[in-house]
Length: 301
Image: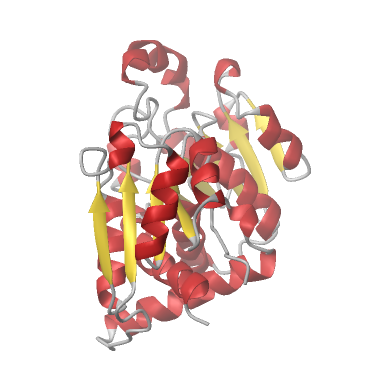
């Protein structure tokens, strides 16, 4: 039997993606009602963190507990991977003991190699290239608040980073238009632009990009590992702050999202992220429900 991995959104079909979002909404409702549902009893999720995280760790760990299973947190200090053990060896050993493995790391090629040698599903908790689990939560949140995103306009403002790349994949799979407003030096990678060109428009004027948008999204200007570039990035991205001026040219009922953590006064103004168009807290909570839907999809026959 072929093992199903979730390394990018493109590992899903459009129908599977949509079904996952609807299932996540069902699981959220069940959770709110206090229903006990434990399809992963006695199952184990190994969580390998080479990059630290609050939301990724807590959401996967809580999700496994709520599903009746168990999650094991492994930092670089806790594994032989951090001491130079080959990825292939770690993948073989961990997958012989765990039911599923979540990896949060730097180079995307590393998680691809891990999946190649794993005998159980591998989930991408984030790489430098993409952040697919966050897009499950974001698209669930849009569906809950606004309905089907098909045919809508989404604007990404800021760095053409891993989050941006996953938004590009989502645009293609769910059939929405994505405007990307970014400085010339911080464009998305060419391979992502080539793969999604029919759904994406690259722009450098954030005001123009936000016109009549249904959703505006941003991220920090300097991601983990880019701290030494902070001053340079602040100068480049200063015109790309999401503030009331940008929100004013979007549709009046447009939503604002941010994957968090956020730096108020940098990529987003406080009055936007804390305002009534912001759905960042639902978005953050939905990491739990969307990933439970994903775990069920990958592990329950």
